[in-house]
Image 1 (cartoon, rainbow, N blue to C red):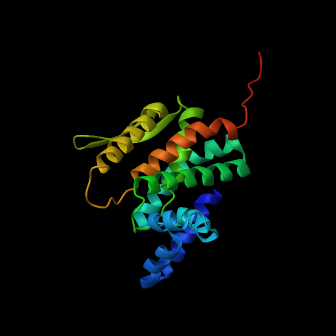
Image 2: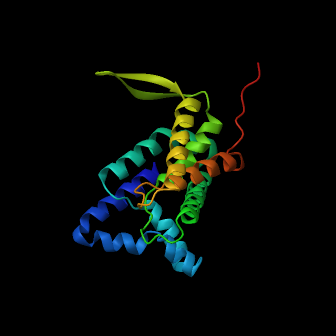
Image 3: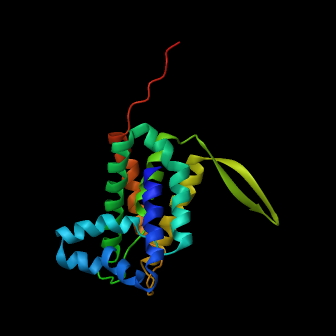
Length: 205
């Protein structure tokens, strides 16, 4: 998938920067306080896009790409390549705005594809609620892979984001995970998917 390739290419470029990577992230990530102060200037609009392709480390990048690989191809099939790209970016923008509304005075850069990927998850839930997601389940010392309905898997994921996001409202310390970006992206994906998806026709018998 093109989006996965772009994300990984940007991440490997980040790795090549060495000690300069922090400066790169502060330049091309979204800093909520700056966006609130400056508004949607051309520079801030660029950052809204570039921030989606930056990641904070191996786990951040690979876990996001795993989710995008599992859920993205089916959603892309239903939308078509161009509509899927627009949908991905749009839900990513909405996710970023949701985080900015939560932390408007934050000076920490927001980076990562998870807000846009949350939009893909929301779309998948609407399009394929009965699909099975192969999931690693730990039972005492044993590990099993079992198929779980998408509505259960993604519903549980969303509830976790909502609980953590609600808890973060009263937290004093800065949060390392942008839960409200996930929440905003997921809801946006659920609401916008019907606009972007193509009707699926089934042969009559």
